[in-house]
Image (tube, rainbow, N blue to C red):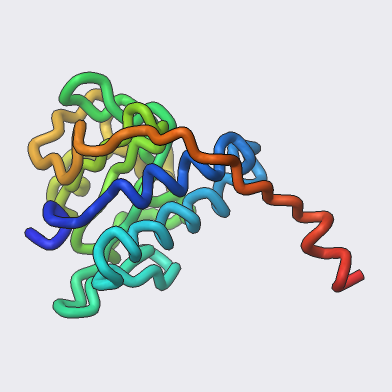
Length: 171
């Protein structure tokens, strides 16, 4: 786990700055999550590999440890997870272990931070009131910060993402 604390997360923040608000629409948020996961690969010197499997997003290539990533613009308030974190919404009746660690990522570049929870911490702190949906309890305390106040926001140009233009050659 120490490799996550030693990673250089500036590259993730730089990617978020270059993406800007282009992937904030509800239909594009999965793409933004994938972009964050790919940037995490670079931040960890490619030890963390984005695999996008059911129940987990990344795997540590050295240990086989599985990581689920959840990101939102406003994930934390002080030392509490206050953003909505849906750990599993597959409409299954039970919450089965599919990952070893959950990385909660606050994706606003000026407030970028990452907290890590074990699967047990997630399992013990779930709101199970909605059948088939498992969300972390609101205001769950963060006990393990991976990155906090260790990046800066650079004045980088937006990297235009024009889906219509990308599809022109296919049409």
